[in-house]
Image 1: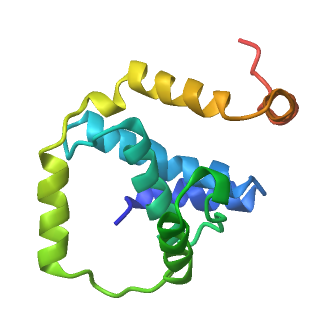
Image 2: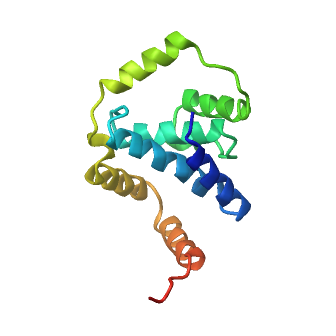
Length: 150
């Protein structure tokens, strides 16, 4: 279950009209923090990000499933199911929950290091075209919060 602070920040982003990926970023940030503080580990930065996106979908963020070219059919199906489950308060299976926690506890904390996250970002950027990267940079510049003069 995501922390109340994360839910609050994501709802605030939604009210401000920010994109679903920005709203989901709050959940990913929370997940990275969990790995860093040792609450559990992750096999890779990609796994930590995937856990955060999964939590976002379950919390009701309208994230589309991943593109067919970049993920398996099973992953897309799982993402669609999580989006449908959004808002349901069904309690998860105790056995399954404990097993998942145990498995994640055995993983390392290196997945949330700055180097690992930078590697993941560079890899993700390489799979995008020059035009897509350029558009993203222009949008970031256009929508960036103005700096306060101090």
